Each structure stands twice: as structure tokens, then as C-alpha cells.
Image: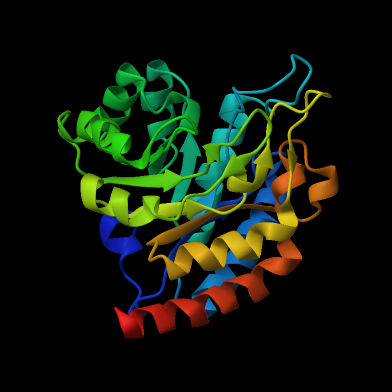
Length: 275
């Protein structure tokens, strides 16, 4: 099932969205398996193709003392266990070219962080693994510019790609989402376009060195993106965001996931009707 990710992501008989969701970073096996089990139950009921997301390490942190992970190999083994036990694809982000082959042994999709989406060696290394590559749009880039990031992967022999919008810098400490970017990137990149509905509400560069967020707006961003015709949704979720070790300020509580995804499914069906 995970051999052809492109087919899997488009495999909803109802035409529903696909979903990439999970914790910001793998904090341990129990929390990861619990999130995967609950999200798979919800998405299966909604006929929504589901990919478990979890970073094995967080390389982009504001402060030296910020939590980065439980150890690369330990976290990657947990991601592989999620894949093997629940028979679902898993995605994780990589930060340098040397990590591409390592992570590819454990996951189905390699994700390029937004800050690194112009790094040619990283994109080429990800492409050459043969894995599906999800490229996050830099907060500093226009949607049209993502065509060049995608071209680096395609010209390296891999056309299994998606792009994910996660907002654009708006001043020093906020992000704004331009929904026009969804159809623009679908046109210029010729691939699925995903909306990251949690990082788009991040408030970076806070005085204390810990990013803030506006999680109360997650549903608003999600509904707007589905209305604008996005192909998939990316979100980070946690059993208790208040105690999450990374990015808790903009996560969706796991208990709220089912209600949100049911609402988005209804909206998606309505959008399909008027296309």
C-alpha cells in the first residue's frame, strides 16, 4: 500500500482530502502509537487517506536549550513501527543531504522544511532516494517561486512531489496565508498542494525565544484552504499541546481532530460538487 504514495494520496473513492498529521516531534513510542491509532480510526471512517507525520529531530530551534528529539535512530525506529503496525505511510523532515538516505530507510515521504526549500543539494538528495518528496513553501517565497524547487526534484529524476503552504512572513512576528497561492502552485508546480493549518498560525521570533501561535484559528484556515481547493491538509496534533515538547502553542488537541476533519469532509464534498 505504501509503495505508490501518489496513488495512495489520491485513493479516496469519495474524492476526499488526504491528511498528513501527527506530533511535531517524536517524544516517545507510546504517544506516537496512540496518535496514529486514533487518527487512523477517524480517517478510515471518513475515507480520508492518512499519512502519519513525526519529526525524528527538530533542527530549527530558537534557543540552544530547546528540545530537539529523543535521538535520531530511536525516533526513526518508532516511525517505522507506526508504519508497520498500522500499515500507513509515514513522513518526516530532513535537514541536510546526508540525512536523506538515512531517513529513507524508515519512512515513505521525505519532507523538506520551509526554511530549506531552496537548498539544492538537499532537494537533489531527497529526489535521488526515490521517495515521495513534500516540499514546504518558504515563508519568504512567493507561490510562483515553488516551481523552481519542484523542478530541482523532477530534473533529478523524481516526479513524486507535493508542495505545502505554511504561510508567509507578515512583519517580524506573524504569518499570513494567501489562499491565492493554492491554485497558483497547483498550476505552476503540477502537483498536489497541501495546506499546513497549524504552522500557518505560528508566531515566530517571540521575545522569550519560544514561538507562539493562534490555535483558535486552525478551523478558519482549514476551511478557507478546503474552499480554495487544496488537495490535502497537514496538521500537528498532540494529546496535550500544553505539555508538548515542541510547537505546542499552535497544535490542535487530539481530542478536537475528529470534529474538525468531519467538518472539512462535508466542505470538501460541497467543493467537489461545484467544481
